[in-house]
Each structure stands twice: as C-alpha cells, then as structure tokens.
Length: 153
Picture 1 (tube, rainbow, N blue to C red):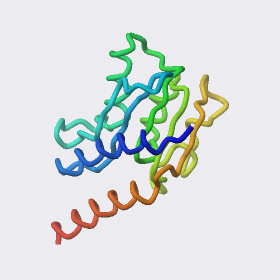
Picture 2: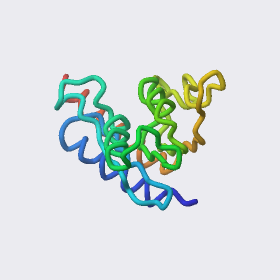
Picture 3: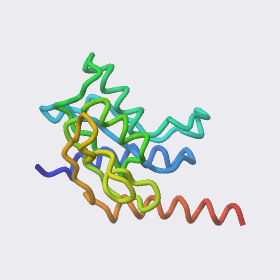
C-alpha cells in the first residue's frame, strides 16, 4: 500500500500546528476502506495539556467516529514517530497499523529509543512502517525548532 497520499493528509495537519506555534506533528486515522475517521494535530500549548498530542487527538476522534474503543482495522498515519505516551495509547486502542514519517531520536517509542509498539510483553503489537516521506516531515520539524531558537536569542 502506498501511504504517501495519507501522509500528505497528516502533513496538512502538521502545518496547522506549525501555523499555531505548536510542534508540527499531524495525524490521521483511516478505517479499513481508507476513509479518514479521525484527525488531529498537536495542541499542547493551545490547550495547556501535555497529553494533547496529534496521535491522541486523532485516536480519540476515530474512536468517537467508529463508536468503538478499539481500532484493530485502522491505520494511524503520523508525521513523527510516536512518543511513549502515544505508543501506549496505540497499543491500548489496538490500532492495526502505524505509519510514521520522521524518526524521533529523543523520544521515539516505535523503534528509535524504545519499542513500545513492538513489545511482545504487551497485549498488542501493531504493524509499524517508519520513514514515509521522512525528509519532508523532518524539514518541517527542523524549520519549527530553528525559528523557535532564533526567537529565544
């Protein structure tokens, strides 16, 4: 399956976060037919909520749309590798597949720093595909942090 089109959708969500001064991470959740059933972008600053990550917002939206707390037949597409909190939510929601763009060498929990999504001790392991449109996703993150550092100097 070519995930590039779906990553474009997640990237548009990340751009919304960027425009609002949030770390530019965006996510969409697709049902088994490839229809978007949830979407989200980081809103940590706007909501003063450390848990308002793109993945959490998209998963919550998808669960409401699907009317189910489990998303076994769904795919989460996110512009950055999930952190431990989001990876835990992915496992708890039994998401079938995770597709991410940029790897996160500081907080990544789908293989970079930790592998929560692949941990056999947990009750669920989604399929995981990383590095999809990686350069584009990484470039937006780098631009955000470069601007942030230049403002603080």
